[in-house]
Length: 102
Image (cartoon, rainbow, N blue to C red; front, side, top):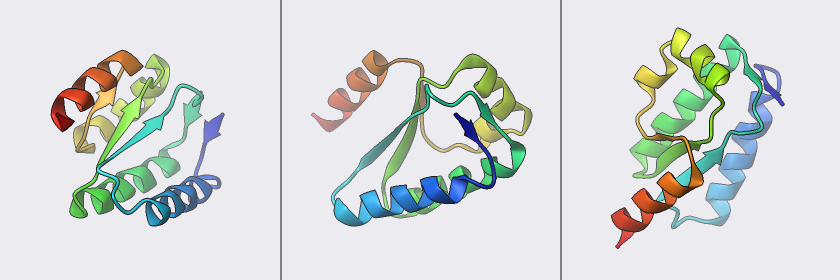
């Protein structure tokens, strides 16, 4: 899957719908293992969405971002602006969130 400026609106709409249906969400985990490419025009939208969630007290985490996609994101300082955690495995996110919620 490629994430580019043209299809990022769909992702944004889906996330907004999910949040509207589940107002008690504290953590949102975006599983990114299916993303093979992200263009620079699509980077700003997840950052803005993450900021909106942060303002509502919701943490948005990325899970299983492929190394070369993470490299693309680091070139535009995405990881420097991301306010929550980028997890490499489901095991790590499970450990952190179960510990944080207990």
